[in-house]
Length: 591
Image 1 (tube, rainbow, N blue to C red):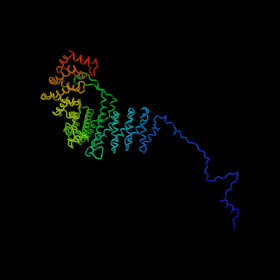
Image 2: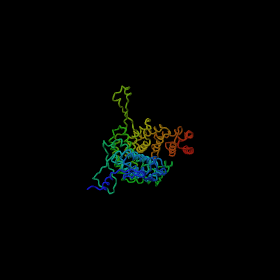
Image 3: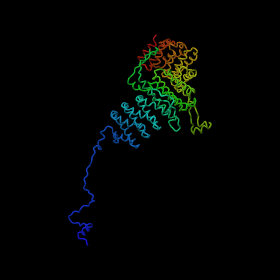
Image 4: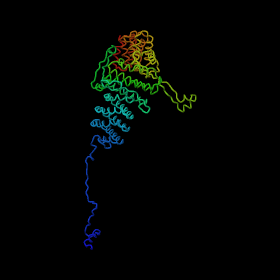
């Protein structure tokens, strides 16, 4: 049966070609792309806000919030860019503007101390330095954040982090010593961990009161740079600076009234002491200043480490440059421990038994056994000199050694030894060494006159007790007088030597007045007043001798009355105005 016409037509319709007719639109296809859509702008006002109206904006137009968010990025360079932006904000804005956002900035800068990347630690250290220089007065409430992170950095497992942390301690001690002293309890104990390791003794019973255990041994490892002598020297210097800051803040708490001339003449007169509550609060919480047990634990750990480091580097009486620096750092730290003990115990450290047991045997056996010390200096000869000096042997041409005496260091050693051992350390070697320093003009200025005078005071007090030491005493006073006459009339060292004359002419040492050196010294003072420029200390000393009528100075003054008055009136006196000079001369030269 065939298909119908309708079916045939439907079949053709699937493939039929559309005939175009004039005036009629084509039917749009189903897959046609429409181009008649409309578009509108979506505007977010925060994107186009005027950032220049904000206070804290960098040159790159970054706000504080944007910079803080960069510090948490995984890329080192993005974090560094954020830190540099924070530095820019700190440097280019006033402190009153920065103080409003100081908490956020400090909280963001502190964690950079612990970052394992050196680039971030270095930039963070610079940011903290800028903060200390710009907002030192407002940063105190936030310093505990820095102290906590710094304390963690000092005991970090990464040695580079520890080294950078020590540099940051130096920066804080330099720019904010008062604030660092308030956080001494947090930082001080971690210093020792940089060169030592803890020692746990299981046999030691646990004390009732829990205290910090400072017992430790020196760290020795060839692969660890913290074991090098250079690093130890740096650590000891920073620790010395840290302890010096604590002592300096403590000294600010005491303000003494001026001492009158009569208080100097009359023994037993002391200046009154006034305390400032604000200054006391700065160091009042430092444990090693108020808790003797804490100080003893700290010293019991530090002092053996000092002697252990010295034992590693010492080479007998001849010191290298590093050995000299090590000994100087050790003496400075022992001096500060001595002062800390005096403040904490409120008594003479020489009477503190635990400190004496800690210092006396070790200092005598390890340090003073090789006294006096000298420094070994290496002199290398260049190629030109080597060709010219053909007379020298080859081994002598390459290196020559010279010996340089360390008078200042030896004087410091004697001074510390005298403090520790007291009068027991006064022997012929000590007297001869001090006497040789004072007698030799070539050694002037190579030692601390202050320390020499302190030792000479003790020597004079000890020698004056016995009549058997009359000859030694006369020679010692003669060397002091020789040094006094040799120094310039306006020298401060010369004025310090007058303290020894004051002791020699004390009322308790009347038998010294008749010694030729003492009488000649009084005559030297009168001669200098009549012909040389003078300082106020010289006038005060002469006046005290006149009031005591010591060494027959009164006839000498009256004999040269006119010369003294004419010389001092024409030249003037350093430290006195005309009215004060006139009053002093009337009292000094009155009949």
